[in-house]
Length: 244
Image 1 (cartoon, rainbow, N blue to C red):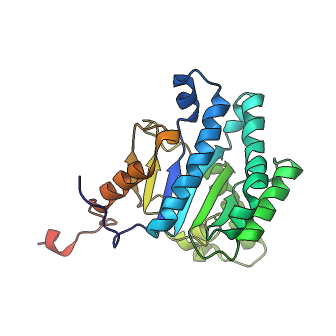
Image 2 (cartoon, rainbow, N blue to C red; image 1 turned 90 degrees about the vertical axis):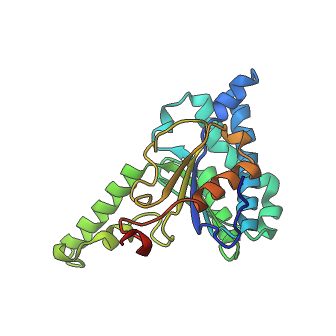
């Protein structure tokens, strides 16, 4: 296998964290055990990304559609960040990782919302990787919200219809302050995007692996990055040697 080139590390990667339930099922354990294992794995992968010099890691934790899951599972997922934050608050405060949460917040209970606000506050000045947790997030919902905001700006005279362009939409998304997405990774052998960062991934590279998320370790991350480094990224154009 090729060596990882530390001089060609992507700036922004995203991961669809898939396979927690199947990981637990294979071990004859409840699904929530898989989610717990997946949460600890996210800590490890974020730390590895930080060491490698990746600037942004954006992960799909809970979609707008995941509310359809059994109440017990939803309640566990909604309360896991609270338990984790209380347990590791001092370590989080001392780390270099900046944490942000994007998605809807109107369906969170107060304790979860307060935890998110405090987590973002105590890490806002950290200079390492930006770890973004997408919770109650759906790309179609995000784009719909952006369109509504743009329509509002037009109706208030803040914006002319003829001035609307791709940048206008980008600047009204949750990720408006983020760099372009370079690499999208999905674990667990599923080959779909599941309503995740649809606008942002227009020219990102896609990497799919059969490895379940709790087993996606540093070595698997390196495999994905090495694969990315072998891609020929043209962004719709041609490189000089291809145009002859």
